Length: 70
Image 1: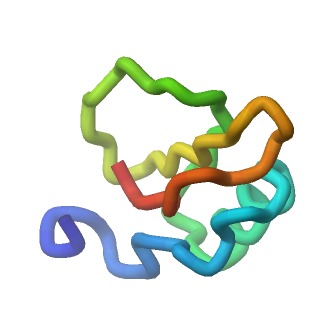
Image 2 (image 1 turned 90 degrees about the horizontal axis):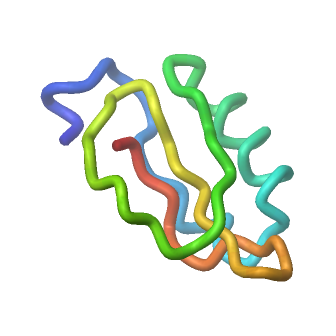
């Protein structure tokens, strides 16, 4: 994954459990090449995009899966 995408951080395991909006702000601050999108589970679209990080949250708004580029 990292070899086909621009350089920069590509995974954020440390933000699992945080509020989704806070997590998205952290991601965009740490990698200026991506747009973090907060979305609820489950995710059906499996397309890959180097400029996107899905921040998947539960009903309570907390991140439940490690956000990664894609």
